[in-house]
Image (cartoon, rainbow, N blue to C red):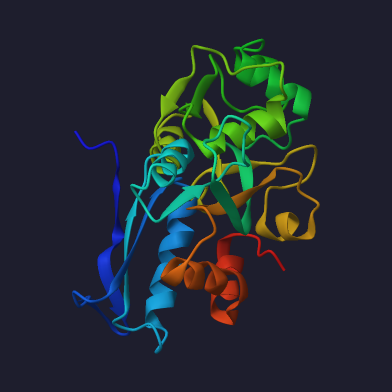
Length: 272
């Protein structure tokens, strides 16, 4: 079974408004794998990039998922052009790779909509996710009753890494009883179907869920952009050495093109 999950929105296609058409054989191919959080943004940016008149018919994208660690490993071994990462570099990462920052993202603690908790402090989040607190009756303001169902991401996930660093700290770990999911989408779907569930997700995946305010500050795009919301992390496109050729042009496009900036601002935090 292929460990990558193809992202159907842009698989070896050139997007030329108003239709998606097959790219000519001569088109340069940018392959990407990795973060399920970065993938929706990367797809939108790729579609906008190939709509530019100077790149129409000259570039195509193959975008796959799998988690940040997989994207980093893939690009370090030359399997893909760019890895998608929603976590910061680590000392243990392969040598010779470059993390090219393209945006920032809010990580929200989320519950079922029938359980609209008004706020959680960092210590409350730590108690819940470490398993110190196991019943909703112990959480002030909770509407749910019964056991707390933790729904988290796998170890390869950049969102998991961000949650660990932002909310849990270096000494606490998520309880081993938590259910793990391989993507933001699967995690969100599970929480939507379980009134007793709690988890965390990239802001763009929280529709249909209750975003729990963190330390009294709602997890909104506006608060993330202003810096009021503390639960933000970086998005990267990772290259093997300095990006070159069409990949270099694509990264530059994501950082400076006005249309790209508007796309980033729709659900994420632009770099400027």
